[in-house]
Amino acid sequence: MASASEIKARIDSIAETKKVTDAMYMISSVKVRRARAEVEKTAPYFSALKEQISDLFRYIPKTSNRYFAVPPPDDGDHMTHGILLVTSDKGLAGEYNQTAVKVAVEYMKKHPKTVVFIVGEYGRHYFADHGLEFERGFYCSAAFPSLYEARRICVELLEYFNDGRLDEINIIYTDFGNGRPSRCKRSCLLPLERSRFYTPDREISSDREFYPDPDSVLDGIIPSYLTGFIYSSLVDSYCSEQQARMSAMSAAGDNAEEILKRLRTEYNGVRQAAITREMTEITAGTKALAAKRKRRVLKNDR
Image (cartoon, rainbow, N blue to C red; front, side, top):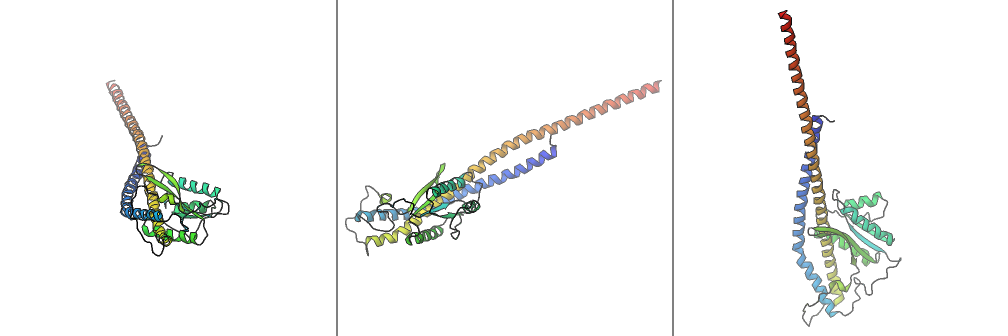
């Protein structure tokens, strides 16, 4: 059995660890609120962009715009696919990273010709450690997402798509459930489908002109729309990461509390046993002294 000093040292160590997990929980909760507040500021702008694209299609029965699949591309072996995989920079987030990586790896097995762009250090380290190919020249931190980063990612992906190096680009990210369990999603970034922009019962003016032409207007709007979609996905993933970290830290804190409760009971038992042993020794010593005095008195009486 461990000594009282050893148990006390373990109690102090676990108590300090619990302080760290509690602090990480609070930090993650603040980060979630901050991230949601930031995305809500930009949501009206990107929502208006989507409505404008929807309005454009009211005037364009057909489009040959390069960003739209008309008809949807053949999913054959000749196609080159792209994946934007969103992970975190750090661990301690439960299954958040593992789930996203698993979805990406399964997609790569179905589509051998896949170019992977990774956001976050966890994903980069995983692919490097497992010998999986990814674009090493593409680097983006998963720290607090910004529109600047989303725009930079969009520009690079569009460059691949416009040059014909990629026929289809998907994004794999973790959708934030607003308190519900988050789930990993795969969404197609390019090419787009008209059905994504369908808004029923929306009234628009009968006369509208597009300069120089509707397709050129689409070319100008689509990059901004994609930037907004990527930004929203980055924020969703970031919030999901913090939510997963909050759950992990909460579970770690609960486990620490259970261990502390057990250790304190064990510590009190060891202390009680030590006190009992000392009292027994004192009592035995007292009795021995009393018996010694009694023998001395009897000897003197003789």
